[in-house]
Each structure stands twice: as C-alpha cells, then as structure tokens.
Image 1 (tube, helix red, strand yellow):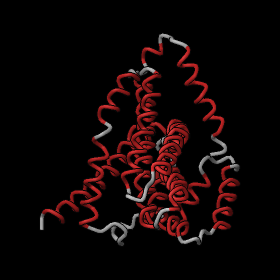
Image 2 (cartoon, helix red, strand yellow):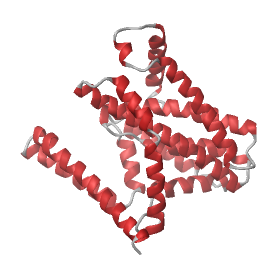
Image 3 (cartoon, helix red, strand yellow):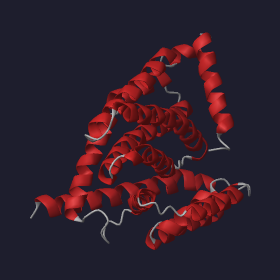
Image 4 (cartoon, one colour):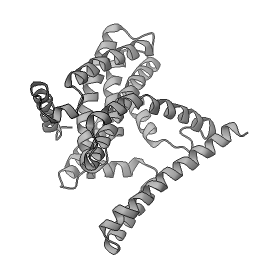
Length: 296
C-alpha cells in the first residue's frame, strides 16, 4: 500500500485533469461527474448497510464505517486496477482482509456478534465494489487491445453489475448445503484466515509481533525485484497444499511449453485450454452440488 501511494496521487491528478479538460478522447469515456455521483452514492449505500446490519449500530459509528469503507474502496480500487492492468492478477482477498480489519476496530465497541456482523457485511459490500472495479479495468484493458469503445464497456458493466452478486450468493447457498463451507470438501482457506483475524481482535489476543514480522518479511521480498513475491509466499503458507501444488505444476507446465513450443503457442493454445480447465472444473463442481441438493 505504501509503495502504491504514487499511484493514488497520480489517480487524483488524472481525475482533476479529466474534470478540467475536454478532448476528443474524453467523449469515449463516461462523464467524470458520474464518477463523483457514484462515490457519493456508494457512501450513502454503505451507511444504510452499516446501520441496518445490527440494532446496536449507532448513526455516528455507521457514518464512520461508511466513509472509511468508501475511501478504502477507492484506494484499493486504484491499487487493484494497477495490478490487474500490469499482471492480470490482483490481491483482492488481501485488500478485503485489511478492510474488514479496519471495520472490526471501528465496531469494537459493540458486542462481539454485532461487531462481526457489521464489519463482515460492510466489508463484503466493499469487496464486491473492489472486485467490480478490478473486473472493469480488465475489460477496459481487453477492449483497448481489440479497439472497443470504453464508454460502451462502462455502460454495459454498470447495467450488468447487479447480476453477478445474485448468482454468486445463490451458488454459495447451494455449495454450503451440498458440502458445507469450511468442511474438508470446501475448506474456504481465505474465510478461515479472516475468521482467525476477527477472533484475535475481538478476543484481545492479536499476535501483533507475528503480523509485524510478516509485514516486514513481505516488504523485503517485495523489494527483491520480483513483483508480488511476498504475497505469493504468504499464499503458499495458508492455502491448502493441493491448491499450491497444482498451481506450481501449472506454472512449471507453462514454462516448459514456452521453452519447447514457444511463447506464441502458449498464448494461442495453452491459455485457451487453461481457461477451459478452470471453467470446466467450476461447472462440474457446481453441477454436482446442484445434483446433491435438488436431485435427492
């Protein structure tokens, strides 16, 4: 985050320049005033979500959660967009973990159950917003490569953004009923990591020294010149071994194909096949869960 501060400053300046100037390229983008309106609408919506999440939530605390949540959505959106634009990968789970940690501290005056509900609900809304920003940036990057109009892409994204969360929520319910979230079949390691952080903060047993040591080690690894090395090492620690192993095998296969068949072959053949593997595995898993729930 500290290393991304120049990106955030640059984003603020570019927004100011876009508001002051009108060029031929500006007509291909949605008006900057629409963005400002969306930021205000996000703050209002987060405030409503925070206040309605629990009866113990006061207006003042809900307002603070909404303002900080909106600010974090914007800051994290800039960082995630930069990551996805450069590498096609974004540390969304890490940004969400930080957001919920901040919200937990704000809600720490409430009872444990109320603090957990409020912070997770507002944090989930922030996570969806950050994910939408990342997805839009990836779409814009792809559209630029194929000559699409950014304005039309943005309008299409806004019109269709409501459908994704509804489908995901329905799938989560189905998967939970079929396998049970947190079980051996569906371990949900990111959720487990988040739960441990929340329990540590509310229980007053935050392993601060361990967090600081991990942050320092991550900073050193990031300074090594290999982008994202700290995050990759961290993921290797808390993700299940079968995920890390298969991920490593896929990476090794890509390097081997690049050396034997060439980079062009990997781009034209390997990546589409890999995308098919991801989609196919997801469809089979969801289909099996649906069969378990509705097929008796």
